[in-house]
Length: 359
Image (tube, rainbow, N blue to C red; front, top):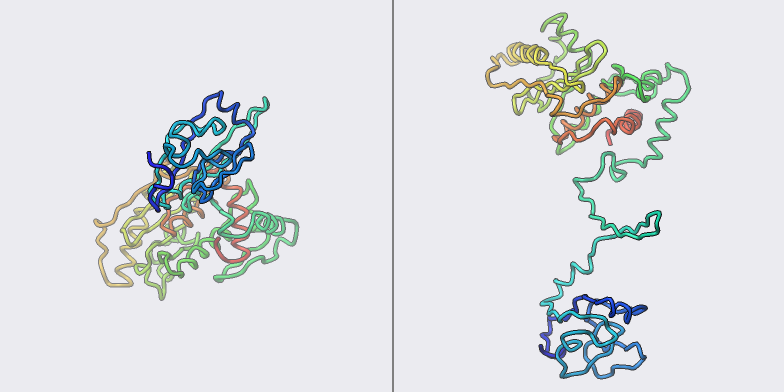
């Protein structure tokens, strides 16, 4: 192998690290480096200089001089070095980048005092956890907002008002853990989802009130005909219909782009009859508002199974699941949350309602 000064200008030489136990003992306390890249000679452990050498041989080691077989005579980086690998030629500077960008490591020790090093893989943007601090206020701010809004006070006090809706302190109290969400909170939150859809990059959304479906069932199309006065719902991308089933909340999503009507239930119940009722509503709405017959054969109805969407594990979080189904769907994102996110989602929803914006 050619001596270091004969290497190409773009090249570098690196010694691979392979030491025997004896060499480990000889090397104890040494600060040898893995990269033989210094432009000037290094200093040996005995303090002797290596003047005249054009390249160092593993920092802290003695240079063997020109004419030797590569860096450290090909095998072994002199007696003091502890290196036993052959010299590698690194073709260009770019190949050094991976060594400079090594993964971070976490050092831990167990009860017996054994130390282990766990490599940390950088977290990709799409893998950021739900409610990442980069997207909104810190956890302390959410906690403070929740304590203030859910604390004692006049139950009739209006904490937030927008979209011709009001959320009182009493209604906000339904966002405490273990409480069922009421109409005020769900309607206000779905309007926040619809309001966000006005921004670029989001599908357009129309959210019906929680009172729409009961009125449709009790009064037929004529009972809700005026609910869309001045609005062509067929120009929207997504229509949200919250469903109240007495002691349970569910959600129907009408995707006008894909011509689908899907029922989302966090208890895994079937909702095909509800989807059929809403398809019939769309047919009558199309005739009344546009003078067009809706080709029902082109529409697909689907009741989401328990294995398709996250399910609640208690008897109180159905309303939160409804709101978070809607929030994810109206971003065209996969639904990835679970029951364990519900406590933090409740606090987050308090902040969002108070500040009238979604995080």
